[in-house]
Image (cartoon, rainbow, N blue to C red; front, side, top):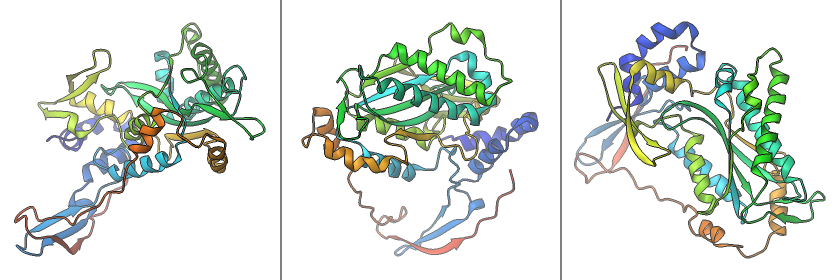
Length: 366
């Protein structure tokens, strides 16, 4: 099955020859790491069957967060930790999307404006939630940055998972939100737009913002998690340690072209798309985040400085799960998995035992 590494192996050198002068170091590092992932370049271990003597090499992964072959266990670990933190209340799933007119500016200043996107969405949401007409309390927000569409087009937006309620100002009462309503979406969109532009102008005083962004509605969606908050959390987990495309969506690589499949969000069915290898790599690499950037952030009573309030909040909640959504989440929570010893793929009777360590060849600088 073709992989992103195969595209880089065949066409990466030509891409770098064309764009290397303009490529940021994190793009070069991502290309280098994905090529080396699970190859002898990074070293690994040699296993041998205790019955037939068959040898198997298991090479190390690169652990670059843009690599489509890494982080499966990291994703599950993150998901388990967040599910343990979920409050036994309904939740809302919100999406904040930046208008197309801002895409060039955001792509140029990713580190600054990605962070402002997450912060502006949280500030707007917390500001409205404090209003006694809606929640009337301090809410908690889990935010995840997402920069691509299903066809890998640049599409920066933020997903937020929010418990349906908040902590009163004095901290002595849990104030539940309406079951089907958190805050007014139209007002939230206007406030989000104002917060984003205010923060962006502060850090980029010389930037030119198109006048059209004030004349259009910024897309904000808010809906209750009717299928269970754990389902939305599982959806978000897939993007915490993953980039724009997985290897199993790539169908063929050759003749300077890449064929892959994607799901059409409007027709809700799978389609195929063919791109030139250069365009495929351009789309893929534009979603490599700046080094050290945190794409998952927490606000309100879920922020690191306030998370100590969670045990207290639990004491304020009803003892019994309030609805079918919460009962479903508790019933379907992940259970510990037993890992059996690796069987021999040759004789299928023996077990693979570690017999040697393969030293890495070393990495070149990006």
